[in-house]
Image (tube, rainbow, N blue to C red):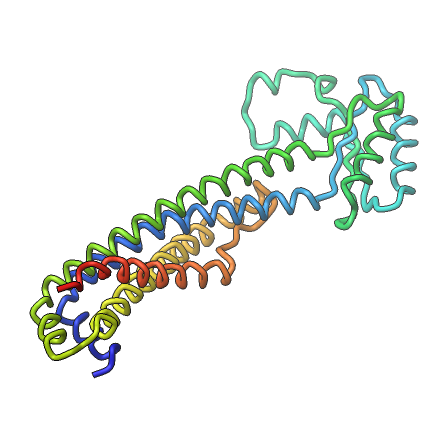
Length: 289
């Protein structure tokens, strides 16, 4: 009988124990997959904002229309600039108060909302070029300030670094949990089949021959548990995406995306590998009977 056949027969006899182990592994990997999903989408948001190529040129109070028109004309003639749009104080007030019922903001006059020139740059524009344009605009007498939204990109970068660190720590916890769960399950199955193991060793079976089906069972537990985790997180992602994708896209400017297939495959493979390692380690001393 081959190791696969022996593993299949042993798995059927102890299927309740294996199901419990797979469930425990799946719970651990769900936590890890959710953390990785957050990291992936934060990275996507950071990249999108880094390539957005936007700038808001806020004009000083009382800046003349002629000065604003000259800035618009100069921006339209600037390389890498796609669109230029002037937003008056009245239009800015209307945009801020849209879909809001804030009494304080509504009581403010139009002069409280600065006029601005909204600039859209090409996607391939470099950050150095964006800073050069911003510095040139800031030096103009009619310009109060220039917002390039690079601070938000830097904040997202810091958040991404923190998320990667948290994911690494969570991966270590998941590793320990999977090894513990699978090792405990294999020990229990070995105790249930101790008579079979003793008979095999009495007839001359080597430890390697006895160990193989248990290692296969451990690998299957880890792989199936991690696969279920990926499928569960994927199902939850589709539900959330189906209901809130449009709102999220409007709010943050990007559409949420699931884990890359390479990451999903790596999770399943790592689950199987961890299960096999845990099974092998748990049997190292228990087979010396």
